[in-house]
Length: 329
Image 1 (cartoon, one colour):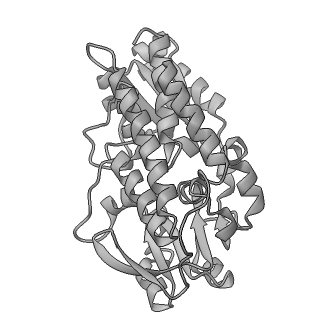
Image 2 (image 1 turned 180 degrees about the vertical axis):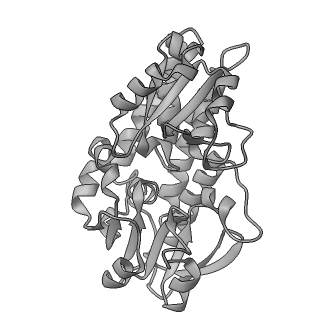
């Protein structure tokens, strides 16, 4: 990381920890005021949320990064994310906001909290199978917002936005919905500057081939070209070996991974299996033994809170870029 990038990173951390760079100017919005935002291809009119609920780290940390912790009714955070929550730069906000459930998002939890607004992703929070959808919430008088990244999977005419642009869209939309536009604009401006600084540092030649490993032994669960790790790897100067896969997170065959000959394996630290155990499995898995990543013991840990769409994505790219430079890439 060069001096300019380090300064930008330090500035963002300070800015985010001090309630997202200060207070808004102007008169506060009245509860009856509305703004219209396009989400997953639909125009939705939002009054100012009074009892918002966020699901999982992607939702929660977008809210925290905008200084909205004191305006939240609560969060739903699966217990599998506990280690990442403990490492979060917003861990004090996590302590301040009530955790409504440590399971998946459910209609029962939302109704019990008397929520008037819910932030989650499609198939990563909202779910037809579990009976909690934006349409059902709307019929109950509860507004919702879906992560733009997850719109790729939503409805008959899915909205496809590159992962980093999807993050910026969410932050700016949330800024409008909660009437903290200036905070959102400052945050996005900083993230864009840091992202551009990373692009300018890309080494010459072919980018390092990176395999993102989340979990799985019979078949690996990994990130395709439509999820946050795609942006993290490309910003860092690498190439996601599953970049051409038109999926967010998906399962593939090991043969495809071996054929791609990864030089680095980015291991997501998440779930009920410790990351050290995941790495031991990958080191000892015979089909991978011939790959440069395993031969040269090139494993990079990607925190779950950084791997999902959220304000930590650019910091994760900065760390991965530093690692790639350390191994001569």
